[in-house]
Length: 342
Image (cartoon, rainbow, N blue to C red; front, top):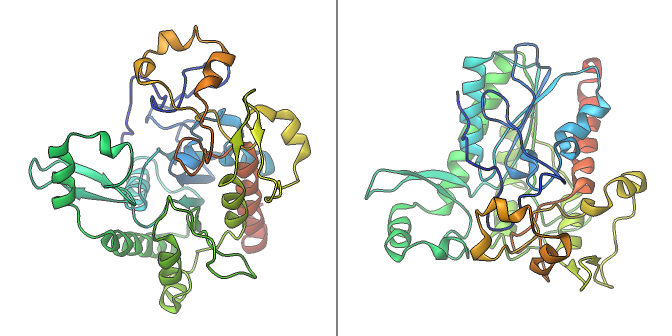
């Protein structure tokens, strides 16, 4: 079982290498986590939101959950860009190499991510929602873009394959007495009182997908351990309006209310409370030049801040605030469904 080791864990397009603010470090299996071991109580699983892209490790949702259950040992299996399919595959590799944790908590990405085979060179590739319109993928050579277009199956295949993988994970956990909790950060578009009236452009079909999978009775009857995170819509609405002023400070749209809570955490993490540090468009000439990054002042870096829609432009992850809400969301489920565990 091996993760993916890279020369620098910085996303070169939108992160400056700033070890004075935060760093990425990996365990012996190349995951951003404490060391994996047979006595792990909770294994948290997910993509970049769980990895904590742009965040100090202690402010990821997994580590904020750790503070709420200090008597439990939490390890994390995550990587930016991983699909549900890939994450569950790695969960089973974890079982084989390490053993069974007592509990697994998954904060899955959207169902439109999946792996497919490039039929021209037999390379396994990642499919993302809007893959042919994503700005970064448009920078690929035209030949490769055409290969992706001709090789990738319909996005609805991703829904099917991820559905099946989750079904298998649930059955395995049931059979092996592993407590399971899973949700997805992409189930946006509704809260308890509203229907699917908010669909951000970064997920072009997320509203229809949500109608299909979450309101579908077959979905509800199939999955025992899915929990819907109703707060997602509030955070996505807020971040769709965030921008930066000339001093690099966050500006809130006057029509969108700031989510006013966790003031102690806000004071503690003011610099990355709402948006993580991967909130730049790093000039192409500076990408990968990590030695140069160390010499760039904060005011100079801030000239590269995105000006509007930081989250939805794909150039920024959530800060400590969204992560503590995730931690509380999962803690409350544990407390309600598995009170004996804590």
